[in-house]
Image (cartoon, rainbow, N blue to C red; front, side, top):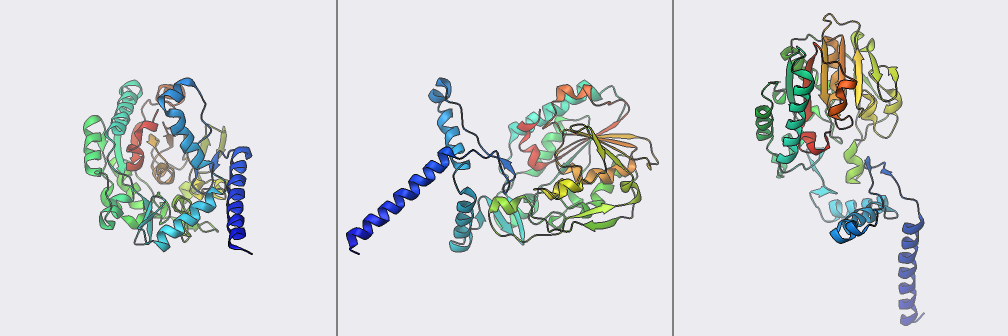
Length: 366
C-alpha cells in the first residue's frame, strides 16, 4: 500500500467516524438524565428571534450539544483517566481528592443566593410562624469542603461569614451550632452527604437545644451492595465503594412516614429506593417536597417542622424520636406561598436546617 493510499484511508476513516457521530447525534433521541452524574441533561433550546438576538440560543445550544454528545460517558471516562493518571492533575471533571475523600469545589460565597434564602425564611416566618406559638431554630450543616479544601490547597467559601450573615438576617431564630460536632470522617468518601451512623451526637445537640430528648441505643444495619456516591459518576473515575449504614431502634422501627407526593405510607427507610440509582434515597425516599413522620412511642407529644435539604433526610429519623410528629418541608420543590394549604404551624416548633451547599445555591428555593 502506497503512502498516498494510506493517507486517503486515514482521511476516509476519520470522515466516516465524524459523519457517523454527527448522524447519531442528530437522529438519536435525547436523554433526559445522566444516571452516572445523577442530574438532568440539557434539552434542545427553542429557536426564537429573541433567543437568537440575545445570544441565549447559542449558549443553550452549546450546553445541549455537550450534554447530548454520542458516547458521552465513554469520552468523559477517557478524559478523566488521561487528566488524573496521565497528566497528574489534582482534580477530574471538577472533583478533587484529599485523604481518600472526593469533593467538589463550592466557591466563592454567593451573597445573592444567601439573600434569597433569608428573604424566604423571613417570608415564611411572617406568613405562617410568627403567631403560631412555637419556637424557631436555625442550624447550618458544613459541606465537606469546609474540612478538605484548606488542607488540599483549594479555595473554600467563607462559612463563618455565611452563618453570621444568615443569623443577622433572621434574628427571630435561635441558632444552634453543630460545626463542632462534625469532622470529615462523618461524611461519605464518594458522596456529598453525611453518614447517619456518625451524626448521633449532632442529632442530640440539635434535640437538646430544642428541648427534646432522643434515644440512646441504635443497631447499625448495612445495605448489601456497596455504595457509590454522586462523585463516583461525576468524576468518571473508578472510585472505591463504601458501606451505607442505617440505624434502627424500637422507636425508629415504629415510625410511620407519609409521602404527600405519592399519597403513600411507609417506614422512614425506603428499601425500594435503596436499590435504585441513588441508594442514599433509602432515607425518607430522597428529595421530596413534603413528608410527615409520626412517632407513636414519643414521650413528648410536641411537633417539629423541619425546613430542610437532602441532608435532613438522614437526621430526621433521629430527631423524630423526640417528637410525636415531624413535618419535613423542602421549598426547592414546594412554593413557600402554598405552605398554608398543607402545613399546620399552630404550636409547632420550627427548625431551618440547611447545608452550606444549598445555602450557596439558594436561588433554587421557591
